[in-house]
Image (cartoon, rainbow, N blue to C red; front, side, top):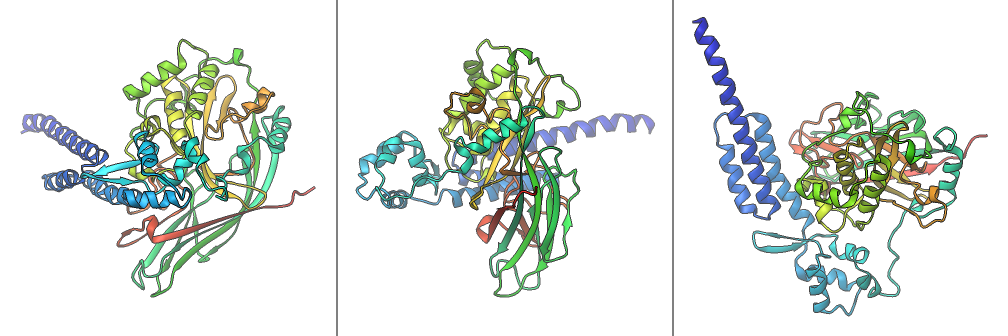
Length: 479
């Protein structure tokens, strides 16, 4: 009997490993079919895979999420051609069909063919004016200017940060009061059922954001995640009422410091692989994967350069050259860095993940950070950026989306490669990390945590079932 027990265990382990490998292959096939727009095929593959004996709960949940991903993709790609043209005509009244066709052939109107039906991304018409100078020139003279944040152009604040931080690496603080809310639409949840919500909450980060003071929440009972939580939140819950929206709100204050480090490239050496850097080296599927296309792009950009800082400069410039455009939901994209490499445009998080993948590929540790940016005039927006490790300087911030400025001062021109303004609150020190308390169902945003998350016993509530608000008030500086 003893010999039998010894011989059976390896067989069971082999069978389990084979089953897990088969499950991964089935999931990969489903993902590929969805990415190619073959939704009917993907649904059939999911149904067949769910019938497999011995399928564990993790594999089952992954397959079910792919069904949900198709639903989310359809929400993003909601326009047919006539609707896309109609949206463009709101800003180009005399739009010609051949103009639309030309921009479409150039890939400037993001689309996806789903089971033979070509659908356009809901933001493709507005994105076009950021991607095509010709389209921008065709806009109505009275069209609203394209939006831009206050820190996206060189101003006195970046100079203030640089001057204050040259000696110690940080300075030019701003005290800010934040009020954020999440409102579930009336009757999205049956009356009497408990609605669970998570709203982002900042961590204390020495010399970056400090003095966090919680003010209030509605409902008053709340639970703040431990400071060690990389995607920190305030957890709230309350019962839904018939015909009434369910609103959650938190408010707090904190002090944010600008960052800047002056780098001497000749002093930079390869980063050591230690406890501080090792977690931020190498691949991390699905969004940081060294695909053949990524390796080829890196080879062309980096060339024979060996100095880590100069490599970072080259990669930063290459990713910065990708035009910014409004993004589809991250949960719909199977590999975000690869998407940013090929889509012809990218938003801040997509550019950041691409840059992180390229930095790591070249042996430069890189990690994620994200949150909200704000202005003195009430401007707010979600934003993502990164940090990279350069020895002997340590961790340095990198905002590739804001990019370089046109300035004769090289420190200011390259401010965001090693610097950050004080007009941003960081809520996430990594991407795709679990909440505390844990969320039971799949998240609406599987990568970032900026708008919040909400669910009830019947499942996750997606973005089409609730709204969010974010307000930032810059407080007077105390003498």
